[in-house]
Image 1 (cartoon, helix red, strand yellow):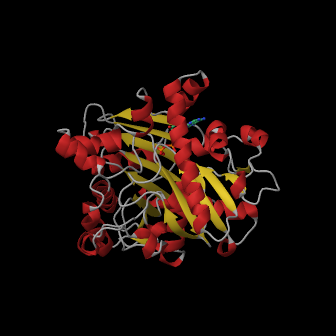
Image 2: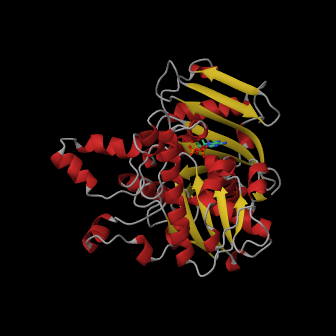
Image 3: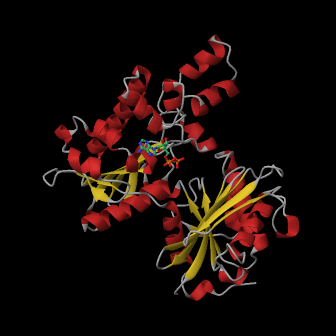
Length: 417
Ligand code: ADP
């Protein structure tokens, strides 16, 4: 159906990001975010429409004096902003055809995006154990949308779903089987929507069929993960039971010897919350460089001769290289290496560091092309490179809108009030 308007929602614990996308064209009509939900003095909404109109409003300034005390108020605020006469883009509530929600954890239940039903909502809620910071916020987002837009179809897209094709020998840890059976401790992987989106973009660009293409996709943002994709299916990924495993990230340590944790707790007097904070929030680029986790600043400092910055980048790129090598070893053949995420899309400098000396595994970077490829889709390897290197900007919202559009389909689009 033409001009299906999909409201894509990404709820965090105190934020709500959204985009209004018109399908099947995939045109973004407006995007915005509500921040500091729960803080009725400082909460605010920012929205920008595709024609450049910007709205910034603080809690309490909108109609009905909504105070942004919770996610439902934030969702109502978003709707108000979208239908606002001067800054909005819709005529009324009835213009929203589907609401598509990002959900972090789908456990072993979901391999694809699904329509939200009572049962689905219950499963997402039950999975809060595995994603205590994220799933409860995602549930709040869904409940708010159900209340504010009753009868509008809702879909859920899971960060973990794409990785449900990873075989057991890759997703199981060598821990007692009981821990898997009782507590479902295994690799789940995250960033799945992004890896799936860039994989599809890459095969279109290469003019290949997804079934016959093997890819290694590097999502390098503040969070970082790398995925091996065989015939369109994720077969391994660097994040694990939580997003802490794998590559070094902005503030997360990535792979470490797990014995460091009992050593800090039992020998050095740290409590487990402190260790958890160290591993998730004080490590990675921030922990090493000590001033910031912003890769732009660290790259600049390294160029200026700062030794700590240089070491931070050396560790960061060394670990990415190791994963690329490992994933080359488990795919029969690799057709393309993809760079995406804030760092992957924008930093020619880090891409060059990562690809250095990878010629022996068929990765030949065209340094000049790499430098001039800005944040847009493009090839940065020489034509003779056995593995094509691509920059592909990610767009998780587009992928969610595509999923929602396909799921709801033309027939079911009638609203059930
Ligand atoms: P998130 O994981 O939060 O979605 P992004 O994918 O937006 O984050 O990536 C944010 C990171 O990308 C930041 O560390 C930022 O410094 C980095 N980044 C953006 N542009 C560049 C650049 N030109 N060079 C190096 N790093 C960059």
